[in-house]
Image 1: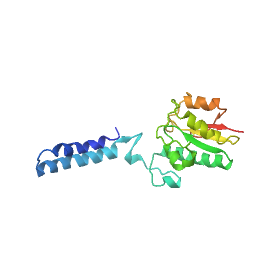
Image 2: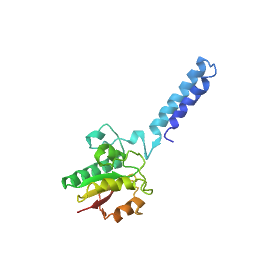
Image 3: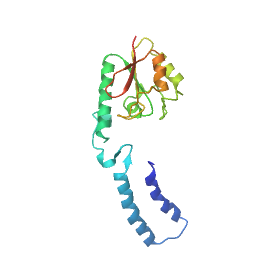
Image 4: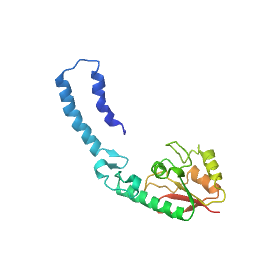
Amino acid sequence: MKGYSLFVLFPFVFSMGHSVGKTYWSILLLVLIPFSLVNKLYGVYEDKNLLSLNAVPKHKLLSPIRTSKSRSQYLNAIDAEVKELRKRNIKVYFYGDKSHAFQYLYPENSFGIASFFQPVDNIEFISHIQEALSLYKGQDIAIFVVDSYPGLDTEVLSSFEKMLLKLKFERKDSLKAKLYVRKY
């Protein structure tokens, strides 16, 4: 669905084998360019159209990005929470399919998992995560489970969250995210 604007290229590729005149290309461009622009500007990406993405997150690395107000507030709240946890000497990690923004902001807090897909119901990275956690025995650790966008959280525990509870993590009240903390 995100690549629908690539269909604009279909007539060009199709016509490469045929000899077509200047009129064909002119009409094609007159129709497709406005259509493509309207679809790009008014089409919905994730939850909003491009024209409504006008909020800027406070984090310096995200300053060139425009997003929805709710996502901007979400990013700002998590950023503030991370700073607070770090002040208390708590090691912070992020995991989940929607954690890529935080792994960009805090690359040292990603368990070293390079995969864009980090499913919370299929714990394929469990051994990698347990290995990373074992490096910090005796240190307080916080893990943000970011498996959905703001406002879409469910109360049902994922396999990953159940695993964290077995590893003696406690779910904490967080402003905007699922946060699990293990203290020593």
